[in-house]
Length: 130
Image (cartoon, rainbow, N blue to C red; front, side, top):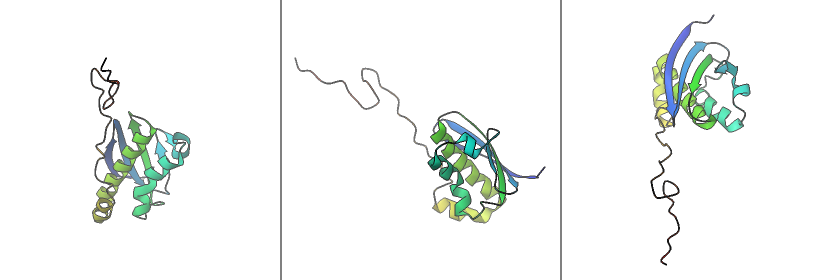
């Protein structure tokens, strides 16, 4: 079994991804399933692979991910964040490149809570004067 190079945690919305990087051939495993089985949308797969493509490390590492919480899109963002952080542990010189692409910043946007007396977070019931 390949030697573990780095471990990092990525977050997005309510998803938390734990990412392990090992030297290998570029296989990505999410919750013990290949990425093509776990993620059906092509855009989510592209999001996960973004940090690897920007740093030219597509076929250099095997990535094992455990992700919980949220939906598939939020999980993809969390995995992207985790891979970016793990790559910096392996090679600190990549920090400037990943930071410029905004892959190290946790995307803090979450769904706004619904307020009482309203149908949604910002929406209001129609006002009736009479």
